[in-house]
Length: 393
Ligand code: FAD
Ligand code: UDP
Image (cartoon, rainbow, N blue to C red; front, side):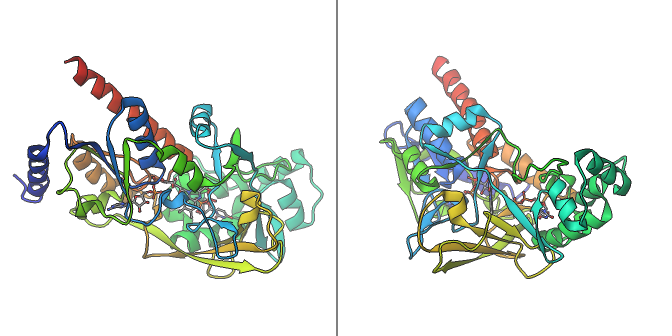
């Protein structure tokens, strides 16, 4: 047997020997972000399961956590989080725990001394080049400048294939190099494919059917999800400090997958950010929620929270995002060699019957919040089916 695998098998055996029907938790859930909180809520409320939810940080909500800053402005400490989804099921599920405030996010990009709509649309093109095109003309213009590719594999391919080299250089190349520390030609197509191109004047950042913010913030929504007598929450606790002490039957892990396996195949690359929060003694600074800076400064974008939250306040708070190689793991980096390394961890994860892996870090997927909720609800269904099968046997 591979000696690297032995410790986990031994750990599993030890855990099993501690179990007793009375004193153990049905689920140990690691991480109180969207993935962990949705599962805690579902398993407690639908299966009457006993849950221990363990979170390393001092708060719930994971990266979607929000709080009031010293001036009383509601901010997102881990960067701007805007909820959007095409799934009515996911929207309705979360709607049990919050009322919604409709919000359409708008972004301007600072390019060639102008603030222009991003995603690129008709107004972006006319503003940038001083043209007066209509939607039909824009389609023809793009056909003329696009570098058509049969095989679209990279983030560069996606953009030059649609809008050509000049728009790519001005809006995507610098931003992507800053954000990822990689050229777009080194990143999967899926990264820049997140941003659409439009030939009309629609200047919303997202296309989704449902675009809204939790009326009283994310943290309040998480509090409502976790308010159940079967859910015990331990903050400021790394699961590694208690997994041997507290008896549990099944673990749901939402932290980084490579850390779970003690990096046995090497570190999975994650991109990090440094957030610089500032408060200004004026009501507004920006005309829209976010301004992107593709070609200048060390930061990629500046977001002003009151646009997102709808809060009225005489002061305003903004966050500057500086991409970093090291620090908290915020973004899985989508490129083939990383996916291959992740597959090795995934095979190990699948071999562990008593642990389920879910969420952006544990499945190494560049997922939005709604996708994580969807993934967690699917896992809940599988766990419920497993429980039902056990009850019937
Ligand atoms: P997380 O939120 O990362 O939760 C995992 C939790 O596990 C963390 O709280 C962590 O502390 C805890 N943990 C890890 N290891 C341990 C351990 N050993 N012991 C105990 N606890 C542990 N999505 C959108 O839909 N819209 C947006 O506008 C948007 N903006 C974003 C902006 C930024 C800057 C970033 C980084 C992400 C953004 N996202 C956005 C993505 C969104 O943050 C994620 O999809 C979502 O928060 C992932 O939830 P999760 O539960 O998988 O992970
Ligand atoms: N992007 C870009 N220029 C922009 C906005 C986005 O090049 O003005 C690229 C960049 O590579 C970014 C990706 O598109 O990482 C996805 O953008 P999104 O706004 O979805 O990023 P997120 O909000 O997840 O950080």
